[in-house]
Structures are given as C-alpha cells and as structure tokens.
Length: 447
Image (cartoon, rainbow, N blue to C red):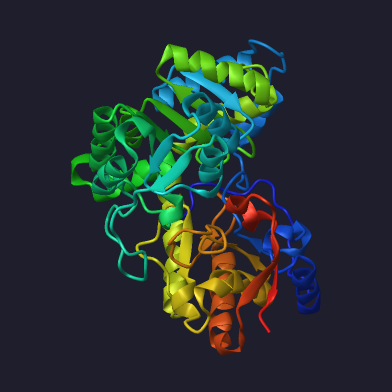
C-alpha cells in the first residue's frame, strides 16, 4: 500500500504501432532522440523525472530569487548539513555540473581516478581533465541470479593493482558510487565504505562519494546488514557519508527534485577552489545555476528522501517490476537494485554478438512493441570496457503504478517471443567524444 495519493495527474497514451515504427527509424534507433510525446512509459532515467510532493511545490512558491545570499540557499545548505553532514556546499545545475566543479579542482593532466564503477558522465569528466578513469568493481559476475548482498562494492584488491600499475602518486582520487548505477544499481556496504576510505587515506588520495542515490543505499544497509536493522534510516544515511572528503550529488535523484545538484567538501581550501569554478561554469556560489525555487525543492526533497516509508516503498516497487519480469522468463540481474531493473540482453539475445549491441536492440524492441523507453548500459554506452550487456529500466520516483509495471512486463514478454527475428545494430554516426556516444549516436539494423 502506497503512503501517498495522487493530487495531479498527466494524461498518457500509447502511440499507434506505425507511429512507433516511424519514430524509431527517424530517431536513428536511438531512443534518446525520440520525442517524449511518442513514449508511453518512460524508463529512460530516474533523473529528474519523478513527482515532487505538495510540500516541495509549496516551497517552489516561497523561493527567494536573490542573486547572492538568498534565504533559499540558507535553507538548502542547512538541509545538506543536517541530512548529509557537510557544512561546505556549492550548488550546481545538476550532477554533472557538480562533477565538473569538483574534478576540475581536484584533477590534473595525467592523474588517475579509481571508482567502484564509473558512470558515463563521471568517466567523461575525468577524461576531460586529462585523467584516466579506472574501474575497481567487486569481483561479481553481473548475470542472472549471481549477485551478492552488496555487489556494488569497491574492490580494494583491484585498487592496489591499479596503484601498482600507475604509481601511488598518480592516483589523486578514489570515488565510490552509491548505489553502483553501472553495476546494476547494486548497493555498497557500510564496511566497504569504511574500507575504501581507509584505502584512499593510505595512498593519500581524496575520497569522494557519488551520493546521488544515498538514501536508497542506506535503505539496503538497513535491510541487509543486521548491525543496522534497528538504526533510523536518517542516521545510516549520514554515517555512510561521514568518511568522505567530498561528495557529488544529483538532486534529480535522492533529493527528489526535477533539477539541481551540488558538491560538498570538508576542506576549506578545496571549497574555495570549487566556489571559483562554480562562478565560471555554474553561477554565483549561492545559486549555482539554479533558481531559488529549485534550491527550496532540493532542501525539502533531501529531508523527505530519508523518511520511511518512502524509500522502502521505492525499493519495493523496483523489486515488484523485477518479479513481474522474472515470472515471464525475462533474465534480469538479481536481487534488483534501488532505482532500476537491469535486463541481461546477452542472455535474452544470445545470437546477437556484443559488437552488434544486443542491449540497444532490446531497447529498440521494447519501444517498438509497447512504447516503453529504456536505456542500454553495455557495449554501446561504454565503448572499450568489459561491461555486461545490460538494459536499465529506471523507475521515476512516485510516478507509475502497478498497471504500468504489468504493461512493461507484458511488453518484454512479447519481445522475448519474437527474439529470433531480430538482427544486431551498427553505428552509422557518432559524436567525437566516444564516452558519451549513446546520447546521440545513430544506428541501423545489420543487413
């Protein structure tokens, strides 16, 4: 039973199949290029696509639009301090703005950054600073029914291997993404957070947590670690961030807002560097490219995100979608993560080789068959890496209901029934920055 009710709704309808066929061709078989009106159920991302609460909308009206030193910034910074434990915060327009501000201050040409698994924009921002991004995921095979309790963990063994390969002086930052989006949204344990922090300290690297789904990760710790079963979620959320020297945050995830982000740091000198970069790229450090109303929405959203039963229901809905797909013999990574279900496209389409992007073919067929937009997070999104061929079904927060989940599962079942009919895809155009090609590249079916 949901602990909220709908006060405002948006009408949606499934476009006719011939329109979906035409739209997919015009989009170059890349669903990022689709018009939202051509989509029935949108699982492309959970970033900024959820429903805000009535308290958040009330705060929007109260937003103080002063250029510098607004009361909305004061309320926002107090929320970051109370919920996340950081007193020095620089707002940005969204999470990738936070990465740009922080990594521009931290990294130099030739540096190395270790991560449990870099996501697309994180990897791109590291590369853009002339640094090298190295993944150190836990040694878990992300295939159906093979994932452990905290499969999003950072592998310190792999971290030490990277230190040996590149040299300790080169490794300037260690990043921990919670939950681990690129590893099927799997959580990171409290023990691993502390172990990774100790590793970063030992090699004299800055320890950064990508905290965009920090509340979901805290809920997994509460559910799966007996030591924290009776600890309030808000306390777990703060404790898991305590070892970090800095955090980056997309407010479009666990701040439950439609736009916004921030970076927060412990060190005063680093804080000043970040503020100066924010002036250059985002705006004055007390608004960071946002309206005062956006700061207000994030301030309230951060507090709502760590209040039960919201986050428990959030994870439960994702698990329900996973169960519906498994009931129809769709291979997914289990147990499900915090924000999305990940389909194993290589298992579903065993006859399509990796260099013909089985995940992207699945994305196209889910849209063609049922108007469901998803995203590939395999060899198309992460070229040159050894990533599993996964398709992410990211559920927007407080948005869809059981009937929508059943439509998604039935759509996947119809695609499964016709899988022998599908060929692979090949890229016919891509942008110069390969790390971000999946946002705009165009493809066509292999003859």
